[in-house]
Length: 332
Image (cartoon, rainbow, N blue to C red; front, side, top):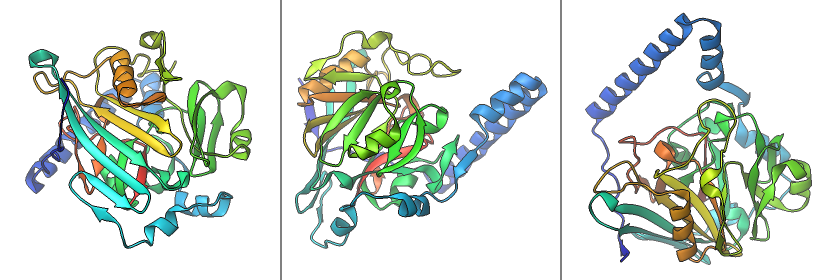
């Protein structure tokens, strides 16, 4: 039986532990770069492709201010001083966020996941933000840092767009990339959400139709309230490093229950006795059990992170957060 309970925020590491972790990470990166560079041209290409930051837009906030043509209700909501926040909920007028932790199974079959039920007064209150307020390849920052930089009360990791050069990326009503390649998810300003084929349309056509945000990862795991067939065989990318998303893994997913009513799930994994992770089919079953009529898989593994009220509330599988390129969030 599912056992919902108040989520316990992951304990914050001490300053000394943070410094040790940073030195270890930097040493590993430097050592890896040295090995790759010594291997010749192919390795140098790999370093440039997967590790070196390539900034296309250096000030996303300014870029969005110059290019947005969609009414944004989030600023009005931010000015409302009536918001009430508890350990598991946030309420500001008609906008609510409620988070919970669920544990199923036992022993090696234990699964632990975190659920955020989100209702927004206006669809534009569900926003996106990029690492370091920049757009491009290999630009990363911790989910919690991106969230804090954008005054988010709630956030999850996004689609890690910066790992790839393809996909349609529309964020906060602004086009950032128009390279259709896979099955995407579109959030519209009227509050509804659709799965769509990126290769059959363009970013400009989507914006004209009222799309506010898109995500490019996948696959869609629930459509019309039913688990999608064949999801265990999907490959997200055809490039190096991210072909397969099968097996029992940490997961992040977004679902739609009704207009302006979303459900977000982060499943922890790779930690026997606490949470083994789930397959895509198991993730789809979780989403339908929560009432999602449409659900879409996002970047998972070490990226899977849920943030609420100033803290990461799940336990990322890397032992701490992994840098990612983007988040979805609701501002406090």
